[in-house]
Image 1 (spheres, rainbow, N blue to C red):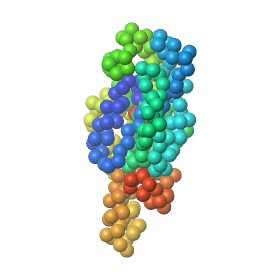
Image 2: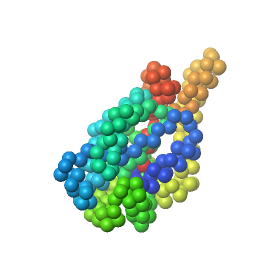
Image 3: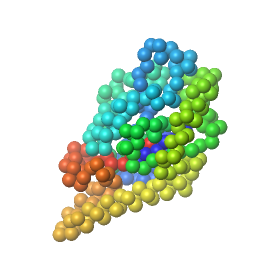
Amino acid sequence: QGGAERPEPGSTTVATRIIEALDVPWVVLLSMDSFYKVLDEGQQALAARSDYNFDHPDAFDFELLVSVLRKLKKGKSVKVPVYDFTTHSRRREWVGKTVYGANVIVFEGILAFANKELLKLLDMKVFVDTDSDIRLVRRLQRDIMERGRDIVGVIKQYNKFVKPAFEQYIEPTVQVADIVVPRGGENFVALDLIVQHVHSQLEKVRGRLIESTPSNPAAAHKKASRTEAVLLLGTVSLEEFWLQVPVVRGSCAAWYWCL
């Protein structure tokens, strides 16, 4: 499943609430923030003065991001970076952070729809829309409390980079979204509809698996139980899926979200 958001940290709240409501095993939350590029000395100096644009597509390592999602989609385990926003670099321990293929993969990020190769991997695209004043307040809270920024620098960066980037790169991508969620995590009706849609698709998969093995109902039920939380994609056949199951803890990465 895939989705994008206006540039504020509310998408993580939406993603978390959807994961909780899904109530299925093996759900992975992957953040686009993990894939910021490592800054060189000159870029770090700009960032220290709030003069580096973190909201431009060039700030992200899309090549690595697409590679990671493709591997997860095939049910493989992958290494994911851990980005340190205080030093603008990847922490050394990122080489040890392993993410496994899962029944549902939720991917959230402000520029989730900005890359054509990434879009091809997204099966459901959701745009989280929040009032601009709320976005600014949330960004201030996050950057000051979690990332050690000062209020003057955050406001400067918002006016110089964040707002223009939204208008140029993020807002136009609402056209490719399958669903637009106004008010973000407070829109419980929209979140409930999304969760219902996911469960509906998973039940269809389960039903097809049971129908495919009518000669052994017990085995079919057992097989369907193992896959009741998996939405198979066109790029993963049933045969390929069952070959992958033992490797990825009985699950297959098959559904993406980019909030």
